[in-house]
Length: 367
Length: 252
Image (cartoon, rainbow over all chains, first blue to last red; front, top):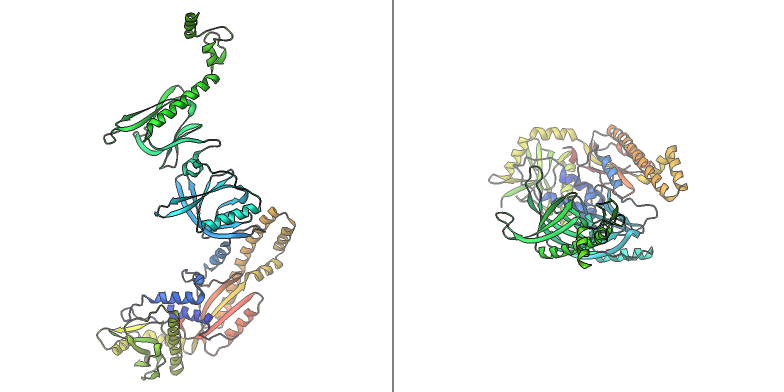
């Protein structure tokens, strides 16, 4: 076998460059001019010869010796996104997915692969499928223009997924992505007939809302967190939500609901202006009274629309109590029969005829 | 602007020789001797050669290499220097600075010259086609073969899992085989050369995969290395790239 030599040949020139830039006799640094610019020349030239894309291919930015070469071979195999047989990729696009679990939230970037079966996001560096969903499970899409922390506007894609949390994505070319996704869904006969409710677009709500739960009102509110161990009670920032099931407060810092009470346990709501501390003077405070087993507890919240909250909560309490009246069961003090409170108070006990003194009074008066 | 001397290589010669306008940008190349050694240089400002134009840089590299080769032919063995090595002279006579360097490193340079006398550097890159090798591995291993056959008869979901398993097994086998081949080739090559250095692997397009990238120091007229490499190249699925000969950049 004869060695190939022609140094004007592209391929061998690259090999020559490896030697001419990194090797040869070394002279004392004091005697020579510092050649700071040289590595760039070498890199640029090698990149130009090899094609820009393959700059990394030439292992210039990695230091691999005999022991780690197999790691590289292994790693290279893993870089391939794991597709299933007969799966075809319609679109590959760089983008990110908003991952949130507890207090950990971050946008994770990688490549989205839109295939005839699913949408997935693949992180090449760690060879992991970070997010995936079968196409059929996507029931609604909404795009919102939001400000990112860098100050720039970006399009956030919200995907409603059957049985899952709403997914938030961001891609390089939103239009193309949406179009291709639409095309694919059409092909497999799936419609985007679901709807994205406003609360689903709210990241916090998405985390704590239960099945069938809807938000009636919400507001950014401070909450007076009770004493806990050696921590004195203190006001903390967060969000207050009134849903059709409960009143709950989301603590921003921990990313979870720290206070909640079922609606039927709330007995009253009062708002007033108060001094909360030496510095927090004349603040609007909403006190919510609720029952917990035997005792009554007050939870305090501070925000702008405390009057509104008072009205709403009290309205709600009134409705509940009238409903409760129909359902709540009490025991007759005379014979012990169980009957609805409303009945006992208005008509008397069906078994023994006991009648509430209040009723007796009115009856007497009326007759 | 301070003056400098661009140094191409160091040779064994005690005469002042003019090699002509063969240097970078057509510069006049000549030797500066000190005792039995000499530096092959051209005069330039004490400033590195830099350019954003890739074609220009390419021409400089080629001029650098070809000057060294010409010196090699004229002076016998030479020790090459990397591109853009310029000795600077702030106040002194640049020629004296070059001589001072040769004096200072005299012993080390002499030793190096003795080591590489009459020798050249070759590059050896051996790659394989993973598809072909995988095929061979499956054929030779009954368990893998059986697994492969099972895949075709199973329903899609199960087949997918089997395929994953097969791929994992194959990866393991390829790894072992690559190590085995590396050892084998390395030993053979070491036996027909004076010295071998392991270099970084280069990424290739699938299904090609580089197994080894070596720099070898061997006698100029020795044909043994070429012979052995030919045998490897003839193996099914293997590809050998044999490049050079060059001045011994990697061994100085």
